[in-house]
Image 1 (tube, rainbow, N blue to C red):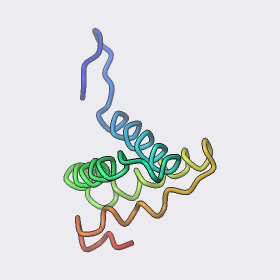
Image 2 (image 1 turned 90 degrees about the vertical axis):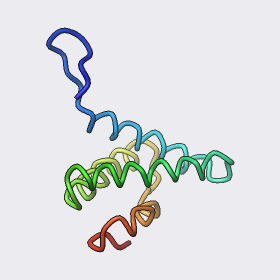
Image 3 (image 1 turned 120 degrees about the horizontal axis):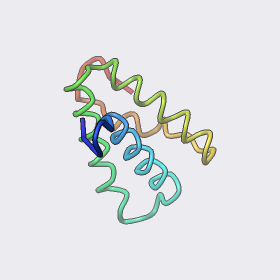
Image 4 (image 1 turned 90 degrees about the horizontal axis):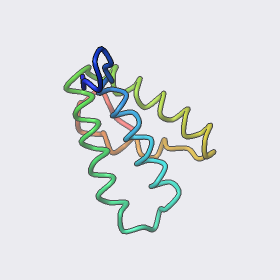
Length: 94
């Protein structure tokens, strides 16, 4: 957790969720950008962090929430990016 002000705490999960939404939105809107590959690497790191913190359930929950927000906001589907987390665990295979 990150302490912002007295008695105000922001969950690192929220920060990861927002970062993931930003990265996926960028990649979906700019598929030919040279920045896509480094952003994909960060997505892999986020997947590892999620798995280390909460296992495959955390990965599933995160991706579900992020997918719904992205589809709702920019009407693009981030599902093709799920395979970036393949190899983190045998239980994640897309």
